[in-house]
Amino acid sequence: MFQHILLPTDGSQLSRETAERAVAFAKAGNVKITALYAKAIGQPSEDYTDLVHPAAVDRLLSRAEGKSKEYLGFIKKLCKDAGVECTALAVVSDTPWEAIIKAAEDNNCDLIFMAKHSRGGPSSLLVGSETYRVLTHSSIPVLVFRAPGLAASERKAKEKAREKDKKKA
Figure 1: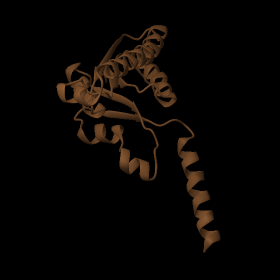
Figure 2 (figure 1 turned 90 degrees about the vertical axis):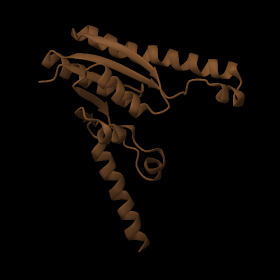
Figure 3 (figure 1 turned 135 degrees about the horizontal axis):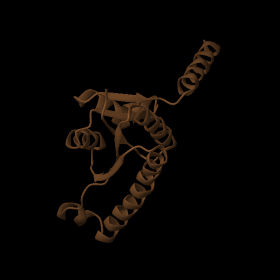
C-alpha cells in the first residue's frame, strides 16, 4: 500500500513514541522511512544579523544542528534495529509545516506519519498546530498518531472543569 513514509520529529517524548509506532508500521509493510527534523530557525540574512549579533546566530544554528543529530539519530537507530531502510534529513525553516510537506513531496513520500500534540485552550489558538497545517495543506495522506491515554486525560480535565463550573453555579 505505502512505500515511503516521511516521519517528522521535534525530539519530544511524543515524537519518540510516534517514531516507535511508525517504525513498527514500516517494518510490517516493508516501507522505507525518511526522518525529518525541521529546524525552526531562519537563515541569517543581512537584515537579521543587523538585529542579532552574528555569534548568537551561529550559536543558535550550532545548537539546532546538535539537536537534529540527536533526534534523527534516535530514529535511525530504531530503523536499524528493526531492519527498516531510513534516510535522515534536517532542514532549516521558519515554517516547519511547509518544510514537512516540501520534504514529503521532494522525497516522493506517499505518507506523512506524525504526532499530534494536544495543546488545548488559548495556547492552541495562539501557537497553532503544525499537524493541523500539514493536514489542511498536504495532498499526501497524513497519519496522525495520538499517544494512548491522551484522550482519557483530556476527558478527565474537561470533567474537572465542568465540576468546578457546577460548584460555582
